Image (cartoon, rainbow, N blue to C red):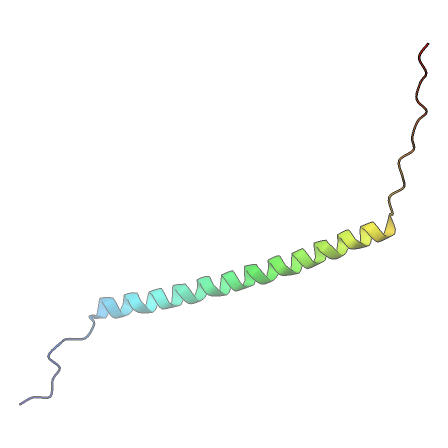
Length: 71
């Protein structure tokens, strides 16, 4: 008897497609991670800028104008 498998393995095109899919998934995951990191970095910078703006420029109370009397 021979020691060959009864079920054939994946064809060359299937193997190639699996490799392409794996590489594409890796690239997409890397881009997603980079985008998430950039978003977090920009959000932190924006919050810091807003906090600095509020600290440097405290709001002055609005001046009330005198009500005009009825004539």
